[in-house]
Length: 213
Image (tube, rainbow, N blue to C red; front, side):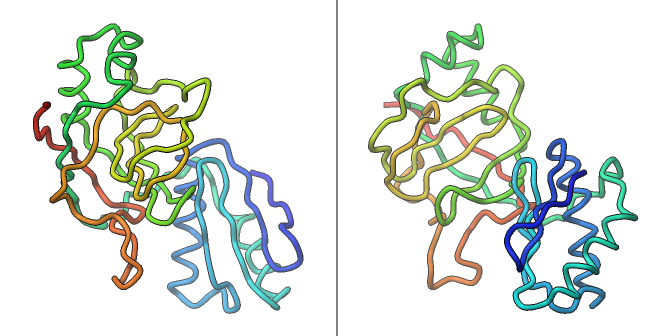
């Protein structure tokens, strides 16, 4: 674990992987809940890092460093439950056959594996409402496309590396697309909702096969 300055008002904790991120993130959130880190305003997990921000409070950053001296990144906490969300998917993605070929499966087997997995929101990023979903079957953990697409429609369901995800809005992207949410699927991001993102860290996500054209 490396603790690095991220400008004058934040620290970036560099870690080995998702389990270590979960351990450090949980320790920091617990300390916040206890009121032990006054001045810290945000703890932001990512794939290999945790960002801690404390605007205008060097004392808070010193307290974070002291706390982290006593945190074992190998001590993975129990997962904080944040509810379960089911998302209906039409499995007609442009890369479904590519994913099936590289997995050594049929398209039906890809769909069965994807819908049979219980995924967990590890963190958010890239775009408002975009959740990185951990827990993909190993055969579906495939690389991004060599050339990203300039336009991916909102609701597209894809895989990239160790993560699954759903594009909450139309945007460029390089994930392998295996399907799309149905028109009646829940809205992933609504700025007028509290919280705006449907999929927050700790949420369990299951995909349901809504058929193919």
